[in-house]
Image: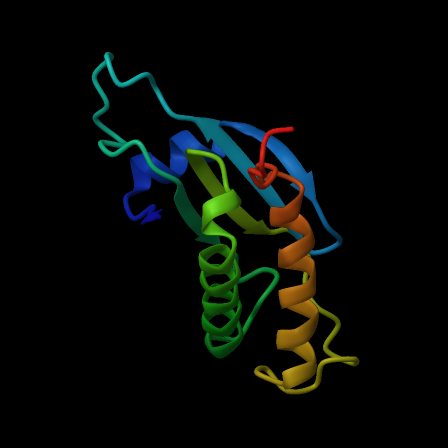
Length: 132
């Protein structure tokens, strides 16, 4: 699994369709070009993952960093089931500060992890089993 790091990579991936949503997150997906065609943005045929966490929805840097770590951990755990595409997880609404008082509370991490697992499960490839 590769990480999306440059602005052109993010712009290209965000231009792709939104393939899954949860109450707080949206998942953008861009199919990678064929190996025969030139691939300047995504040189490796692999799963590419990026995270967009606007300050509008997560004011504190510690919250954004915690959510970013959660995205990368969950995606690493299901990396074998993810399609070979450019995926961007975008925070689309804020977590309620009344319910999650601390910026890095265990409750916030648990809630984010559950939503991210649901989000990535919607685009995961089925596990390959024995042929019958």
